[in-house]
Length: 211
Image 1 (tube, rainbow, N blue to C red):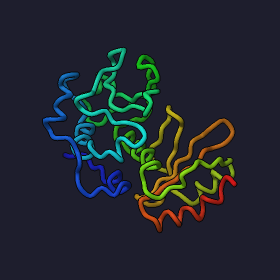
Image 2: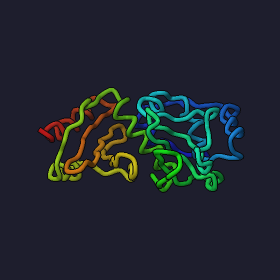
Image 3: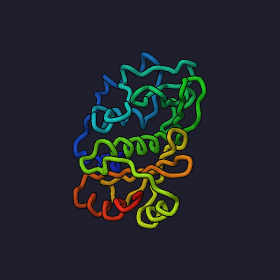
Image 4: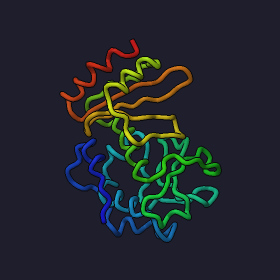
């Protein structure tokens, strides 16, 4: 059964698949015997959407997949300056929806998300901050009390980046993203939407924070 990426498609207003062919994806066989079904389906449906996969950080194309320096992980996503990478443990490559791990040096790895679908959702929302047409453009610094306002007005998403930069996501509609990053004694806030009216609604609440 094909993996359902409806939430990601709604966030980016994607109405048609734009992915690699089965033959192009099969290039992974130069590196490993198999890849998770979820990753295969993502390449097939969404792999060539540049706004989704290349705006900030980078999905590695099937023909460029590689094992990590320690040989234990298949690296499939990278931070835009390669300061960190994300990978799937080689023992998990036959699983449909395995955990994703993050590393700064490709030797020490820490679990980022419990599932590949959670990672792809989190990355899509992070990319959306920079790719969607209506955005707050700049980060606002907010405190604990202001965070409570966000939590009272918007639903917290079920996925986040637990290792890298510590970002949580909020939103009441599928075409919006609110990102909150924890720093030492404050939070960075930024938000965006694919819908102008929806962005105006969000902005009425969030633009008052961090002033």
